[in-house]
Image 1 (cartoon, rainbow, N blue to C red):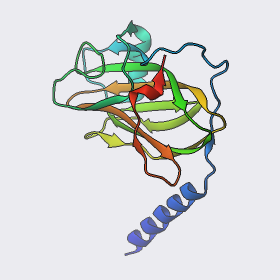
Image 2 (cartoon, one colour; image 1 turned 90 degrees about the horizontal axis):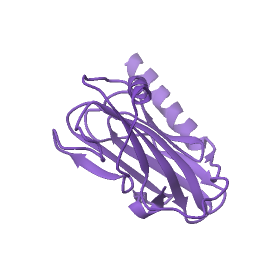
Image 3 (spheres, rainbow, N blue to C red; image 1 turned 45 degrees about the vertical axis):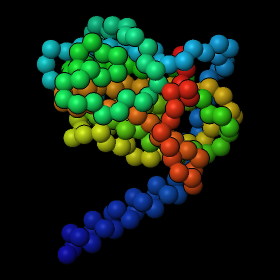
Length: 191
């Protein structure tokens, strides 16, 4: 019973702290890009063996990055065992560095949620909006992150992602705080 009370008190404190935290202030891309193509740039690092941590994915990517075909956005629903993921040339054991822009159509406070299988370190406008350092057991969500976009426009997007083995996904939900979050359309991303 004591363990339960301690755990419940801890969880309540975490919820209250998250609810009272100020939104992360994003920095718009400076300068704003004058011409943006649809999609996102991506580079891959491939491994011959399994790895289970984002830090190892970063090392693999740094050792021999290979430019990949641009992503259409971040709408990569759950893939079955062995299917290719993103625009990678092998289904497993790779890390991806994804760079480009994300567009906020209006200034305001937004909630962002990443879905991933496996690890991710996602940043928009200089702030971390999603993080899972290890493998997941399926397409899992990161903690919802509240951000403030001071102006409408393009914000730098920078994601490190890795795929260990099995099924895979990479997606994003967003929406104004207090409203329903929805899947972000590919048109919100640029490179």
